[in-house]
Image (cartoon, rainbow, N blue to C red; front, top):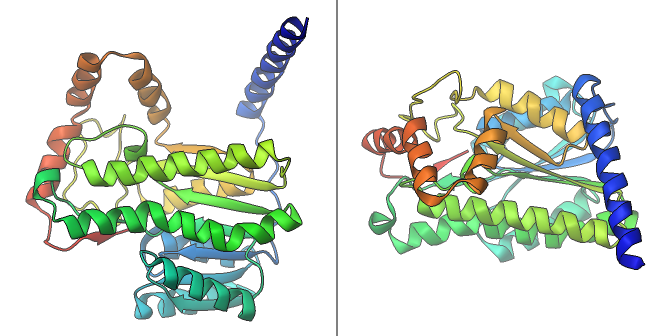
Length: 309
């Protein structure tokens, strides 16, 4: 009897959720008000981290900016103040260092208060094929792109749980959904970030903390300098994304509590095909889309230092 009732419940709810999704496709979700929220952005000294800070500044938030580049976050802070941020605080923080993350997090809680929107944006790419990548760069990639998320969640999630209010945002990558030739360590780190964020989101739902929202962002290559030299075989299907467009979509996803955001929209279909096709077909699809060739071209134009978001 329990099996019958639970199965019936799933069928009814599935129908309802699909109807709801259909209507939301045509009717935009209502945007929430984030004025007065404390927003922490890692990797805020440049790129989409800076652009997100400027967008949130215009929404009346209190900004907390982290980066390892002091001049970069000082400039972001200056620009954010011009955009109307209530308050702006910036801190030097190496997100690959667990002890430093905890130490700076404690400083933030003392000087600013509880963070209510946490955006894990800091990221690096070594730009070396697996066998050519030094161990130190592989470790650094995992520490910045994956493990830093563990430490920031540990630091700021307890207050969100106590208040049943907050938002956790993971800026990952489509390379965290689909393996890419030549980006083994980067893909591994982004797969880890996606899996971690999704699991924590499910844990929050299971414990009834529905006031703490999660958003996982998986964009294709962004024109920020991180992947200079990358090309796209089919620019209409898989365009190199412009930072302003990406940030607008991220902010919209956060304000409407969208759980997954993939960019461009074609990635929803590509990731679905990846899970249904056999290995040879997956490889054929990758060749057709030009992923391998585009990354090989990227390697030829890459500097020796790892690049950041």
